[in-house]
Length: 348
Image (cartoon, rainbow, N blue to C red; front, side, top):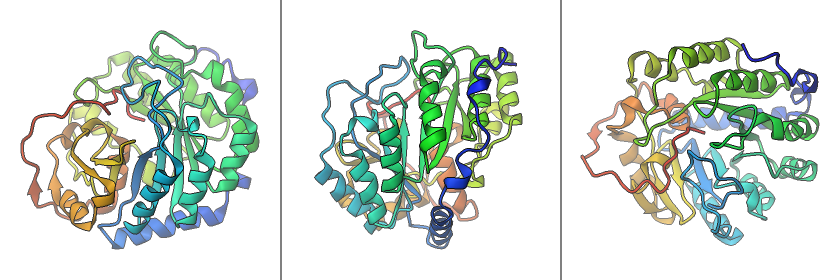
């Protein structure tokens, strides 16, 4: 068990539930129901709003310290195209998205175009005013990555410095908050403590697996696996469609049999406006979003990906669940791996 749950006095019980909009939940449910009927409708598109990040974590390759934010006008054009594709969720990501000064306006524009905005952040730049502004703009959900309890040489995304941000979210957020903790970036007992604190605040929680240089999950030793099982026993308030049960067969058998719909139900749009199957598969297909249409989505939907058997990317699994009963007919041709400019060792 974690050492004494030292942050327990800071916790609150279900602070977000009364303020969360039931209309927003209903809108999401309606969008997912429509996507179930229409298989070539993207469920979630990740949109990079800046590649720059204020941190430098040892496992992360999806950032730099110099890139300017993607201009608001350019982001609006990309959001317009995602709306034409009838995307359900638009995930605003980076780098660190809070470094884009127009982020609130981007969230509002995603909502204006009829889609549901969500975002990933390391949390360091959150303030009360930003939390309130994002909620008023229509943000539906925010995910924070907290890797351990105390900063170390690998990561500064730690519970101790971020605890004031969690208190502010508990007090002011009108959107869903989910805390992602990672096994492998610190002592596994610290991941358990992070999950306990997150649930105590009333937040959703998830536990991700470290990936190796090939984008595949690294095996857990007996100690880490025991902690992983304890985290799962804590329960999770996340919606059923965000379940991460796909990790169990990967841990047990080293692979999983499923139908990956990346490039169709889920895809990644980098800061240059190019579409990638996911962050670890940069360059595939590497096509400009403005030229990405239903023909591309159909092709990706029906293509069997050779990397799927060991894939630990949650969004790919979650977005593909709607179509487990639908066939796949094509096999992706063998090709050399692209340079891993977007490659992340940790699933977020």
